[in-house]
Length: 389
Image (cartoon, rainbow, N blue to C red; front, side):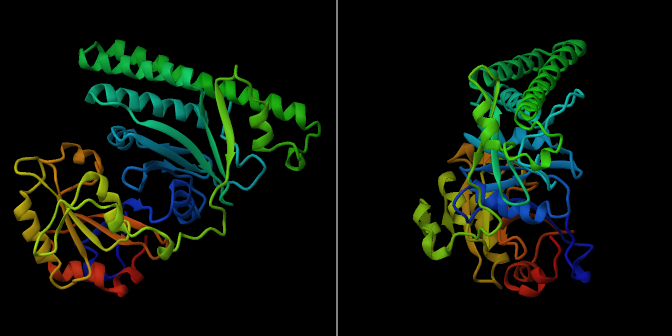
Protein backbone atom coordinates (compact mmCIF):
# COMPACT_ATOMS: atom_id res chain seq x y z
CA UNK A 1 0.00 0.00 0.00
CA UNK A 2 1.32 3.43 -0.90
CA UNK A 3 0.26 6.61 0.80
CA UNK A 4 0.26 9.94 -1.04
CA UNK A 5 2.71 12.54 0.11
CA UNK A 6 0.10 15.26 0.55
CA UNK A 7 -0.82 15.27 4.21
CA UNK A 8 -4.32 16.64 3.89
CA UNK A 9 -5.41 13.55 1.96
CA UNK A 10 -3.42 10.99 3.97
CA UNK A 11 -6.39 9.84 6.03
CA UNK A 12 -8.90 9.81 3.21
CA UNK A 13 -7.15 8.44 0.15
CA UNK A 14 -5.33 5.19 -0.52
CA UNK A 15 -3.84 4.13 -3.84
CA UNK A 16 -3.24 0.44 -4.48
CA UNK A 17 -1.13 -0.23 -7.59
CA UNK A 18 -2.88 -3.38 -8.77
CA UNK A 19 -1.91 -3.42 -12.42
CA UNK A 20 0.89 -2.07 -14.55
CA UNK A 21 -0.55 -1.54 -18.02
CA UNK A 22 2.04 -2.37 -20.64
CA UNK A 23 2.46 0.42 -23.11
CA UNK A 24 5.52 -1.52 -24.25
CA UNK A 25 5.54 -4.24 -26.87
CA UNK A 26 5.38 -7.34 -24.69
CA UNK A 27 5.47 -8.88 -21.24
CA UNK A 28 9.25 -9.17 -21.13
CA UNK A 29 9.70 -5.44 -21.54
CA UNK A 30 6.91 -4.63 -19.10
CA UNK A 31 8.22 -7.03 -16.44
CA UNK A 32 11.80 -5.80 -16.76
CA UNK A 33 10.69 -2.18 -16.39
CA UNK A 34 8.45 -2.97 -13.42
CA UNK A 35 10.99 -5.11 -11.59
CA UNK A 36 13.58 -2.39 -12.13
CA UNK A 37 11.94 -0.46 -9.28
CA UNK A 38 9.84 -3.11 -7.50
CA UNK A 39 12.85 -5.36 -6.85
CA UNK A 40 15.43 -2.60 -6.49
CA UNK A 41 15.68 -2.90 -2.71
CA UNK A 42 16.51 -6.60 -2.87
CA UNK A 43 13.14 -8.24 -2.17
CA UNK A 44 11.92 -10.70 -4.80
CA UNK A 45 8.54 -10.23 -6.48
CA UNK A 46 6.21 -12.35 -8.59
CA UNK A 47 4.07 -10.70 -11.27
CA UNK A 48 1.75 -12.05 -13.93
CA UNK A 49 1.46 -10.56 -17.41
CA UNK A 50 -1.89 -11.07 -19.18
CA UNK A 51 -1.55 -10.50 -22.94
CA UNK A 52 -5.34 -10.25 -23.31
CA UNK A 53 -5.42 -7.09 -21.20
CA UNK A 54 -1.82 -5.89 -21.58
CA UNK A 55 -1.54 -5.87 -17.82
CA UNK A 56 1.20 -6.84 -15.38
CA UNK A 57 -0.26 -7.84 -12.01
CA UNK A 58 1.94 -8.14 -8.92
CA UNK A 59 0.78 -11.20 -6.95
CA UNK A 60 3.52 -11.09 -4.31
CA UNK A 61 2.31 -11.99 -0.81
CA UNK A 62 5.59 -11.52 1.06
CA UNK A 63 9.23 -11.66 0.07
CA UNK A 64 12.88 -11.44 1.06
CA UNK A 65 16.15 -11.20 -0.90
CA UNK A 66 16.11 -14.95 -1.66
CA UNK A 67 12.53 -16.12 -1.17
CA UNK A 68 9.08 -15.02 -2.22
CA UNK A 69 5.53 -16.17 -1.52
CA UNK A 70 2.78 -15.54 -4.05
CA UNK A 71 -0.92 -14.99 -3.51
CA UNK A 72 -2.78 -18.07 -4.74
CA UNK A 73 -6.16 -16.30 -4.57
CA UNK A 74 -4.99 -13.56 -6.94
CA UNK A 75 -3.61 -16.13 -9.38
CA UNK A 76 -6.86 -18.11 -9.28
CA UNK A 77 -8.78 -14.98 -10.26
CA UNK A 78 -6.56 -14.56 -13.32
CA UNK A 79 -6.59 -18.22 -14.41
CA UNK A 80 -9.74 -17.88 -16.62
CA UNK A 81 -7.74 -15.68 -19.01
CA UNK A 82 -6.39 -17.70 -21.98
CA UNK A 83 -2.67 -17.11 -21.42
CA UNK A 84 -0.54 -15.84 -18.55
CA UNK A 85 3.20 -15.19 -18.30
CA UNK A 86 4.49 -15.51 -14.75
CA UNK A 87 7.57 -13.41 -13.97
CA UNK A 88 9.79 -13.73 -10.92
CA UNK A 89 12.69 -11.38 -10.20
CA UNK A 90 15.95 -12.68 -8.76
CA UNK A 91 17.83 -10.00 -6.84
CA UNK A 92 21.24 -11.60 -6.24
CA UNK A 93 24.34 -10.73 -8.26
CA UNK A 94 26.22 -13.95 -8.86
CA UNK A 95 26.69 -16.68 -11.43
CA UNK A 96 23.58 -18.53 -10.20
CA UNK A 97 21.20 -15.58 -10.54
CA UNK A 98 19.92 -16.39 -14.07
CA UNK A 99 19.12 -20.00 -13.13
CA UNK A 100 15.83 -21.14 -11.57
CA UNK A 101 16.39 -21.75 -7.87
CA UNK A 102 16.50 -25.29 -6.49
CA UNK A 103 17.39 -27.17 -3.33
CA UNK A 104 17.27 -30.57 -1.69
CA UNK A 105 15.59 -29.40 1.53
CA UNK A 106 12.01 -30.23 0.56
CA UNK A 107 11.09 -26.70 -0.51
CA UNK A 108 9.42 -26.16 -3.91
CA UNK A 109 12.00 -23.81 -5.45
CA UNK A 110 11.22 -22.10 -8.75
CA UNK A 111 10.44 -25.36 -10.57
CA UNK A 112 8.16 -26.57 -7.78
CA UNK A 113 6.44 -23.17 -7.66
CA UNK A 114 5.76 -23.43 -11.39
CA UNK A 115 4.16 -26.83 -10.77
CA UNK A 116 2.04 -25.43 -7.94
CA UNK A 117 0.78 -22.65 -10.19
CA UNK A 118 -0.24 -25.22 -12.82
CA UNK A 119 -2.10 -27.11 -10.08
CA UNK A 120 -3.76 -23.90 -8.88
CA UNK A 121 -5.01 -22.86 -12.32
CA UNK A 122 -6.26 -26.37 -13.11
CA UNK A 123 -8.20 -26.42 -9.84
CA UNK A 124 -9.67 -22.95 -10.44
CA UNK A 125 -10.64 -23.84 -14.02
CA UNK A 126 -12.37 -27.04 -12.94
CA UNK A 127 -14.33 -25.21 -10.25
CA UNK A 128 -15.44 -22.48 -12.66
CA UNK A 129 -16.15 -24.77 -15.60
CA UNK A 130 -13.75 -22.83 -17.80
CA UNK A 131 -10.54 -23.69 -19.62
CA UNK A 132 -7.43 -23.00 -17.56
CA UNK A 133 -4.81 -20.51 -18.72
CA UNK A 134 -1.67 -21.62 -20.50
CA UNK A 135 1.19 -20.60 -18.21
CA UNK A 136 4.67 -19.49 -19.22
CA UNK A 137 7.27 -19.04 -16.45
CA UNK A 138 10.18 -16.60 -16.62
CA UNK A 139 12.69 -15.14 -14.20
CA UNK A 140 14.31 -11.74 -14.57
CA UNK A 141 17.76 -10.78 -13.26
CA UNK A 142 18.83 -7.31 -12.07
CA UNK A 143 20.66 -6.94 -15.40
CA UNK A 144 17.47 -7.55 -17.36
CA UNK A 145 18.39 -11.07 -18.45
CA UNK A 146 15.38 -13.35 -18.85
CA UNK A 147 15.30 -17.12 -18.43
CA UNK A 148 12.24 -19.12 -19.40
CA UNK A 149 11.74 -22.34 -17.48
CA UNK A 150 9.04 -24.85 -16.89
CA UNK A 151 7.90 -28.44 -17.09
CA UNK A 152 7.40 -30.75 -20.04
CA UNK A 153 3.89 -31.09 -21.40
CA UNK A 154 3.50 -34.57 -19.93
CA UNK A 155 4.42 -33.36 -16.46
CA UNK A 156 2.14 -30.32 -16.77
CA UNK A 157 -0.80 -32.55 -17.64
CA UNK A 158 -0.06 -34.81 -14.65
CA UNK A 159 0.03 -31.81 -12.32
CA UNK A 160 -3.14 -30.37 -13.81
CA UNK A 161 -4.88 -33.71 -13.36
CA UNK A 162 -4.05 -33.43 -9.65
CA UNK A 163 -5.58 -29.94 -9.62
CA UNK A 164 -8.77 -31.14 -11.33
CA UNK A 165 -9.02 -34.06 -8.91
CA UNK A 166 -8.68 -31.68 -5.96
CA UNK A 167 -11.46 -29.53 -7.42
CA UNK A 168 -13.73 -32.60 -7.64
CA UNK A 169 -13.05 -33.35 -3.98
CA UNK A 170 -14.06 -29.79 -3.09
CA UNK A 171 -17.21 -29.97 -5.22
CA UNK A 172 -18.22 -33.25 -3.58
CA UNK A 173 -17.62 -31.94 -0.06
CA UNK A 174 -14.99 -34.60 0.57
CA UNK A 175 -13.89 -35.14 4.20
CA UNK A 176 -11.13 -32.85 5.42
CA UNK A 177 -8.64 -35.70 5.77
CA UNK A 178 -9.18 -36.62 2.09
CA UNK A 179 -8.52 -33.01 1.06
CA UNK A 180 -5.42 -32.85 3.24
CA UNK A 181 -4.10 -36.11 1.81
CA UNK A 182 -4.68 -35.01 -1.79
CA UNK A 183 -2.99 -31.67 -1.26
CA UNK A 184 -0.07 -33.24 0.61
CA UNK A 185 0.47 -35.61 -2.33
CA UNK A 186 0.49 -32.64 -4.71
CA UNK A 187 2.98 -30.77 -2.52
CA UNK A 188 5.27 -33.81 -2.49
CA UNK A 189 5.25 -33.83 -6.27
CA UNK A 190 6.18 -30.14 -6.33
CA UNK A 191 9.10 -30.80 -3.98
CA UNK A 192 10.15 -33.88 -5.95
CA UNK A 193 10.34 -31.85 -9.15
CA UNK A 194 12.44 -29.23 -7.38
CA UNK A 195 14.80 -31.89 -6.01
CA UNK A 196 15.13 -33.51 -9.44
CA UNK A 197 15.98 -30.15 -10.98
CA UNK A 198 18.50 -29.40 -8.24
CA UNK A 199 20.22 -32.77 -8.69
CA UNK A 200 20.37 -32.24 -12.44
CA UNK A 201 21.87 -28.80 -12.03
CA UNK A 202 24.48 -29.94 -9.49
CA UNK A 203 25.52 -32.76 -11.82
CA UNK A 204 25.86 -30.30 -14.68
CA UNK A 205 27.96 -27.90 -12.61
CA UNK A 206 30.21 -30.70 -11.29
CA UNK A 207 30.79 -32.02 -14.80
CA UNK A 208 31.51 -28.68 -16.44
CA UNK A 209 33.17 -26.74 -13.63
CA UNK A 210 35.95 -28.90 -12.28
CA UNK A 211 37.25 -26.08 -10.14
CA UNK A 212 35.47 -25.32 -6.88
CA UNK A 213 35.35 -21.67 -7.95
CA UNK A 214 32.15 -21.79 -9.97
CA UNK A 215 31.98 -17.99 -10.05
CA UNK A 216 34.66 -18.12 -12.72
CA UNK A 217 33.38 -21.13 -14.63
CA UNK A 218 32.77 -20.04 -18.20
CA UNK A 219 30.67 -23.11 -18.96
CA UNK A 220 28.12 -22.32 -16.27
CA UNK A 221 25.59 -20.56 -18.47
CA UNK A 222 21.89 -20.99 -19.04
CA UNK A 223 22.54 -21.82 -22.68
CA UNK A 224 24.95 -24.64 -21.82
CA UNK A 225 22.66 -26.02 -19.14
CA UNK A 226 19.68 -25.92 -21.50
CA UNK A 227 21.66 -27.87 -24.10
CA UNK A 228 22.51 -30.53 -21.51
CA UNK A 229 18.87 -31.34 -20.78
CA UNK A 230 17.43 -34.27 -22.72
CA UNK A 231 13.94 -35.26 -23.74
CA UNK A 232 13.89 -37.56 -20.72
CA UNK A 233 14.17 -34.66 -18.29
CA UNK A 234 10.92 -33.43 -16.79
CA UNK A 235 11.79 -29.75 -16.92
CA UNK A 236 13.46 -27.25 -19.23
CA UNK A 237 15.26 -23.91 -19.14
CA UNK A 238 16.17 -21.58 -21.96
CA UNK A 239 17.70 -18.14 -22.21
CA UNK A 240 15.62 -15.40 -23.78
CA UNK A 241 16.62 -12.05 -25.18
CA UNK A 242 15.32 -9.74 -22.46
CA UNK A 243 14.75 -6.05 -22.38
CA UNK A 244 18.16 -5.49 -20.82
CA UNK A 245 19.28 -2.72 -18.49
CA UNK A 246 19.28 -0.09 -21.22
CA UNK A 247 15.85 -0.94 -22.56
CA UNK A 248 13.38 1.87 -22.98
CA UNK A 249 9.64 1.78 -23.62
CA UNK A 250 8.71 1.75 -27.26
CA UNK A 251 8.22 5.30 -28.49
CA UNK A 252 4.63 6.27 -28.83
CA UNK A 253 5.23 7.31 -32.41
CA UNK A 254 6.28 3.78 -33.38
CA UNK A 255 3.35 2.09 -31.65
CA UNK A 256 -0.13 1.74 -33.04
CA UNK A 257 -2.60 4.20 -31.66
CA UNK A 258 -4.69 2.64 -28.90
CA UNK A 259 -7.72 3.62 -30.92
CA UNK A 260 -6.55 1.24 -33.67
CA UNK A 261 -7.25 -1.74 -31.40
CA UNK A 262 -10.52 -0.54 -29.90
CA UNK A 263 -13.88 -1.66 -31.13
CA UNK A 264 -16.29 1.03 -30.08
CA UNK A 265 -19.85 -0.16 -30.18
CA UNK A 266 -21.00 3.40 -29.77
CA UNK A 267 -19.54 6.74 -28.95
CA UNK A 268 -22.14 8.62 -26.97
CA UNK A 269 -22.66 12.35 -27.61
CA UNK A 270 -21.14 12.95 -24.19
CA UNK A 271 -17.85 11.42 -25.34
CA UNK A 272 -18.01 8.19 -23.32
CA UNK A 273 -16.81 5.23 -25.37
CA UNK A 274 -18.44 1.82 -25.10
CA UNK A 275 -15.80 -0.90 -25.21
CA UNK A 276 -15.57 -4.59 -25.90
CA UNK A 277 -13.36 -6.78 -23.68
CA UNK A 278 -10.87 -7.05 -26.56
CA UNK A 279 -10.51 -3.27 -26.74
CA UNK A 280 -10.11 -2.57 -23.05
CA UNK A 281 -6.37 -3.14 -22.81
CA UNK A 282 -5.61 -0.84 -25.72
CA UNK A 283 -7.90 1.88 -24.40
CA UNK A 284 -6.18 2.10 -21.01
CA UNK A 285 -2.64 1.58 -22.30
CA UNK A 286 -2.01 5.28 -22.82
CA UNK A 287 -3.02 6.14 -19.25
CA UNK A 288 -5.28 8.94 -17.96
CA UNK A 289 -8.34 6.76 -18.37
CA UNK A 290 -11.44 6.04 -16.35
CA UNK A 291 -13.41 2.90 -17.17
CA UNK A 292 -16.71 1.95 -15.62
CA UNK A 293 -17.86 -1.66 -15.61
CA UNK A 294 -21.63 -1.65 -15.58
CA UNK A 295 -24.60 -4.01 -15.51
CA UNK A 296 -28.29 -3.73 -14.81
CA UNK A 297 -28.18 -6.22 -11.97
CA UNK A 298 -24.76 -7.44 -10.83
CA UNK A 299 -22.93 -7.37 -7.53
CA UNK A 300 -20.86 -4.18 -7.00
CA UNK A 301 -21.83 -2.75 -10.40
CA UNK A 302 -24.14 0.10 -11.34
CA UNK A 303 -26.45 0.36 -14.37
CA UNK A 304 -24.65 1.75 -17.41
CA UNK A 305 -26.57 5.03 -17.60
CA UNK A 306 -25.85 5.71 -13.93
CA UNK A 307 -22.20 4.78 -14.45
CA UNK A 308 -21.84 7.25 -17.34
CA UNK A 309 -23.44 10.04 -15.32
CA UNK A 310 -21.13 9.34 -12.41
CA UNK A 311 -17.98 9.39 -14.54
CA UNK A 312 -18.92 12.59 -16.35
CA UNK A 313 -19.55 14.28 -13.00
CA UNK A 314 -16.19 13.17 -11.62
CA UNK A 315 -14.23 14.16 -14.74
CA UNK A 316 -15.77 17.60 -15.18
CA UNK A 317 -12.68 19.42 -13.85
CA UNK A 318 -10.17 17.30 -15.78
CA UNK A 319 -11.19 17.08 -19.44
CA UNK A 320 -8.08 15.16 -20.49
CA UNK A 321 -9.34 11.97 -18.81
CA UNK A 322 -10.60 9.48 -21.40
CA UNK A 323 -13.87 7.82 -20.39
CA UNK A 324 -15.38 4.47 -21.36
CA UNK A 325 -17.85 1.90 -20.12
CA UNK A 326 -17.88 -1.88 -20.52
CA UNK A 327 -21.31 -3.49 -20.26
CA UNK A 328 -21.08 -6.80 -18.39
CA UNK A 329 -24.61 -7.72 -19.46
CA UNK A 330 -23.43 -7.74 -23.08
CA UNK A 331 -20.04 -9.30 -22.29
CA UNK A 332 -20.31 -11.65 -19.28
CA UNK A 333 -16.62 -12.55 -19.50
CA UNK A 334 -15.74 -8.93 -18.70
CA UNK A 335 -15.75 -9.89 -15.03
CA UNK A 336 -12.55 -11.88 -15.62
CA UNK A 337 -10.58 -9.00 -17.11
CA UNK A 338 -9.70 -7.13 -13.91
CA UNK A 339 -10.81 -9.50 -11.16
CA UNK A 340 -8.52 -8.23 -8.40
CA UNK A 341 -9.95 -4.72 -8.25
CA UNK A 342 -11.92 -4.12 -5.07
CA UNK A 343 -14.55 -2.09 -6.89
CA UNK A 344 -14.72 -2.81 -10.61
CA UNK A 345 -17.46 -0.22 -11.05
CA UNK A 346 -14.78 2.47 -11.40
CA UNK A 347 -11.27 1.71 -12.64
CA UNK A 348 -8.66 4.47 -12.83
CA UNK A 349 -5.49 4.28 -14.91
CA UNK A 350 -2.55 6.67 -14.75
CA UNK A 351 1.14 6.64 -15.57
CA UNK A 352 3.52 6.06 -12.67
CA UNK A 353 6.27 8.67 -13.20
CA UNK A 354 8.87 6.51 -11.45
CA UNK A 355 8.35 3.27 -13.39
CA UNK A 356 7.03 4.72 -16.65
CA UNK A 357 4.22 2.16 -16.61
CA UNK A 358 0.52 2.86 -16.63
CA UNK A 359 -0.94 1.43 -13.45
CA UNK A 360 -4.50 0.72 -12.43
CA UNK A 361 -5.37 1.92 -8.95
CA UNK A 362 -8.14 1.12 -6.56
CA UNK A 363 -9.39 4.41 -5.18
CA UNK A 364 -10.85 4.26 -1.69
CA UNK A 365 -12.16 7.36 0.00
CA UNK A 366 -14.22 7.96 3.09
CA UNK A 367 -17.14 8.70 0.76
CA UNK A 368 -17.94 9.18 -2.90
CA UNK A 369 -14.94 10.63 -4.82
CA UNK A 370 -15.24 14.28 -5.79
CA UNK A 371 -14.39 16.04 -9.07
CA UNK A 372 -11.68 17.96 -7.20
CA UNK A 373 -10.05 14.74 -6.04
CA UNK A 374 -10.12 13.22 -9.53
CA UNK A 375 -8.66 16.42 -10.94
CA UNK A 376 -5.88 16.29 -8.36
CA UNK A 377 -5.09 12.70 -9.31
CA UNK A 378 -5.06 13.12 -13.07
CA UNK A 379 -4.52 16.79 -13.84
CA UNK A 380 -2.02 17.75 -11.15
CA UNK A 381 1.63 16.83 -11.58
CA UNK A 382 2.24 17.99 -8.02
CA UNK A 383 0.23 15.13 -6.57
CA UNK A 384 2.01 12.36 -8.41
CA UNK A 385 5.34 14.03 -7.96
CA UNK A 386 4.86 13.94 -4.22
CA UNK A 387 3.46 10.40 -4.09
CA UNK A 388 5.53 7.38 -3.20
CA UNK A 389 4.94 4.29 -5.28
